[in-house]
Image (cartoon, rainbow, N blue to C red; front, side, top):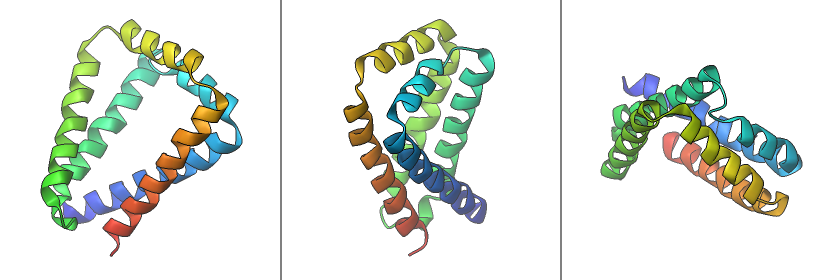
Length: 129
């Protein structure tokens, strides 16, 4: 379980770094992608399914981290919020994504993606120390 969690979290960290780089280079494309979140059942449940499994990986791989309790709490937060988002009407999730895709500016996207890159790198360092 720990090895599979480590592999899954490594892939997640690489995804965060890649997403951050892509959205920094193409913030308008990132905003368009954000506007599509929750727009179809496939997109909605794929997004939430990945979120759910990342949460399980944080829970299952908690012993990989010096502060295992934080990993466990974060994992449970992702799992529980994924389930809640799966239970609410999909249109609410899509409306929330649309709201933010219209409210955020390319500058804000670049700023937030800096945090995505930093968190991805930080996660990689924690996983492979």
